[in-house]
Structure formats: C-alpha cells, structure tokens
Length: 177
Length: 142
Image (tube, rainbow over all chains, first blue to last red; front, side, top):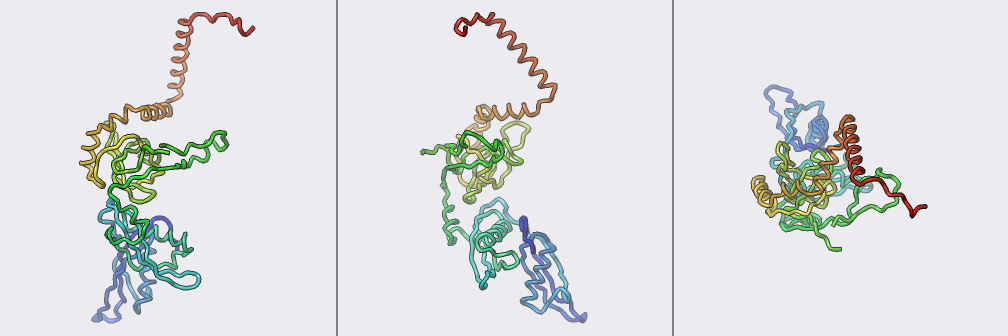
C-alpha cells in the first residue's frame, strides 16, 4: 500500500449485506487516513475484517466521505496514537505534531515513522488522532513553540541554489543578520 | 554574532519562491521549526497579497520591518497594523524592491526593447564623450 503524497481523511461507513430482507445488520463507521478514497475503502475492509465478521465479499460500503478540516488556518497540536510493527515485534506509540490540519499531521507521522523506525505504511495503524490543548502536550519539540512571544533568528542559512554556479571561487553567504 | 532580524510575530518577510514570489507578508505565528503562518495585504494596487497560509522559513527572506500585532490576529487587524507602519510604502521605496522590479522588467524585455535600450545607451555614451572632449594623449604609457 503506497501512502504517497498528502493523505486525506475519509469517513467510511459500511455493513454486512443482510441475507434476508428483514435482517438488519449494524452499520460501522471508521475514520481512515488514505491518499484517495479507493485506498480508504480498502483500508476500511482491512480494519473491519479484523474486528468484525465482515469482509468485502459479504459487505457493502454505504458511504465514503472526505472530512475537511474545520479551521485549516488555525495552528493546532495533534496527538497521534498509533500501533506499528517493527522487525521484532509490534508496539504502541504516542506522537505529537504541530500543524494546521489533521491530514498534514498524520502525513508527517507516516513520514516520521518511515524515517525514524523504518516502519512501512502498511505496518502502521493510526489508532487515534486528537487535537491536544497546548497545556497537555507532552513532547518537548512541540512544547517549545508554546510561546506567544516566540522569537528566534535564522542563523547559518543554507540557500539551496546548487547549480548556479556549480563551481565557484567564493564561499556562499550564510548569514543574513 | 548579533542578529538583527528575528523570526517573530509581526516580522515582515519577502517570499522568495513559489506562487507568491516577490510578495511581502507578515509572520502571524510560528507553526514549528520550519514553518510560519503568514499573511500579506497587497502592496501595489491591482496586485493580490499573500493569502493566509503556512510557508517554510527557507522560502522567506526576513526584512528589516516589523509590525505590532498579537499572534494569529485577524486579517483586518493585520491590515490596519500594516498600514499604520506604512509597510507598503517602505517596501516599494526600498532598494531591494526596486532592484527586484528592475530585474523583472529586464526579464520581460522583448528583442525590440533590447534594441531600443542598446541605441539609447549608445546615444547617451556619445553625448557624454562629446562633453568630456577628446582624450588627451597618454604620456605616461609611452
């Protein structure tokens, strides 16, 4: 399963197809983070199969709806609870991200898990994503931005102009006061 | 090494890359180590400003201007603070802005414009040489 690009949040609802007309099967709803709705549906069946006696072959998806961020221009602290398989076992984790949207935070999470723990996307289950109030943030890299009077310079700026010119006799300028 | 331009709420910055390249905006809040939430009202008439968005610090060039705003102020309050410090005027009259505009104009020159420029420069040089008079004979280089 490729989780490339930016992930989107989908609300997928599905149920087991009732054999008889009178039979009523319960409707299940899941919040899935996936690159598109097709992958979202696939992941929905993957998870539902693990919890309930429903499969794609005997079930039907009632609705797939993309969930958009209510306030995409408000900076939030997200707590992500996840479960992932490492090479030797499966572990739970709690990670924090400071971002504008839930999808962006979860995308960062997948990238970070790949980078720090070599965890592939298919090995990661996002258990829960929640906006955490600033006072309840646990991670120092998020807490350090809890400052309304934040102020820092940009020292040693490396400007990524690698090709112009490729060979030069002058050292690059990295300090812009 | 003492720094003069800090990333802080209200710092005015120039966007150096992307769809809003060359436009000026103010840092409204800091998201994390790499990104800021910025917004910039339009500085020139007919030109759009920078809509509120997250931009990486790598794409920003901090300017020596600062406005007094609280973090995550609304667009209206930002615009009034911007106008109070007259950032638009300060920016458009600054040397950096003028040089950027000149560079843009030079890029948009057509071949005919370049020809006209060459002819104008030639004429100017000829007038200057006429005023200077003939060059005296170089005795030192003999």
